[in-house]
Length: 218
Image (cartoon, rainbow, N blue to C red):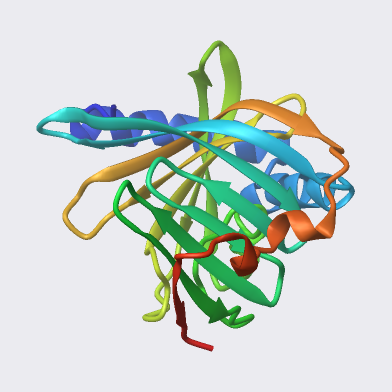
C-alpha cells in the first residue's frame, strides 16, 4: 500500500508541494478546522468502512469491513469480532462467539489520548502537530494528505495520516502505524449524514443477554 520511494525524489516532491501550498495560503490547521466544524454541525451520521492491515514487505495482509454510527461524543462501532458502544460516559466492549458472550464495561476518560470514531475529527487539537503533505488521488477523488505527529509519551500513536477530500472537506480515510511498522488504513465506503439516531442506540443493554459474562471495571 505504501510504496518505498528514492529519498531524493521524495524530498523534491515534498518541497514542491510545500511551496505551492504556501503560495495558496493553505495550512493543515485550516483544513482540519473546517472538517471539524462541518462534522460538529451534523445531527449524527452512519457509515460503512473498510480497514486493512499491511506492511512494506508483505503488502496487504488482512482486509475487513465495519460499520460506525456517531452522534456528538457518542459512537457505536461494529467490527468483525466485536462491537463497541459509547454513550459519552460509559463504554461497553461486546464480544460474541459461538461459545460465549462477554462484555467489558469501562468509564470514559475525557483526558484519554485514545483515537476513537467520535474524536478522529478533532484529534489534531490534542497536542498534535499538523503538516500538509500535498495532494493525492484516492478512489478517483483528490484528497489532501495531512500528517499529525506528537512527542507526548501518553499518545496512543506517534503519527496519524488523515486524508481529506479537497472540495467537500470530508474525511475519507486515515492511517496509523503500529510499533512494528505495520499500517492500518481505515477508509469510508458509504456515509449517511444527518441520520436521526436515538441516544439509547449507543447503550449496551445487558438485560437482553441472559448468559453473558459481565466484566465491570468502573
